[in-house]
Image (cartoon, rainbow, N blue to C red):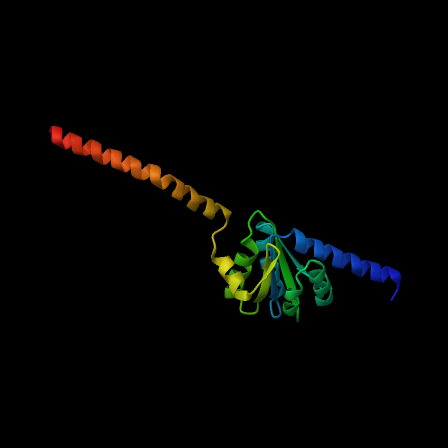
Length: 168
């Protein structure tokens, strides 16, 4: 093998290792059996959520995972493998989209993933997929923060109504 070819392969491995290190979450899937239209639809959904899906040779993925300290992920790199890298904007996006797509399309199989630099199992990816997105979580937090003020306002209103009834 020429030095140029080896250098190109090493560059690909470096790039993928950097993706593993930069990504807040990554989901590994087996896409065997999906039609071109289905893969295009999946890529479109992922792109709209800010998630990048790549199909990379398993040997490159294994070397990149080892470089990134994610060697436990190597078991998932078998057969036709695609990986979705998600940023920190919405850490649940790769898992949520892939798990939902897998439910609608039996050919897609979620194999595992990585969250914040930690290898996770299929069950953990599925659990992450059930979490709401960033806006949903912020909405829940806002509701929790407003609850004491809202309850205090209800109590004041009840006291005021009770005084009005006593005065009448």
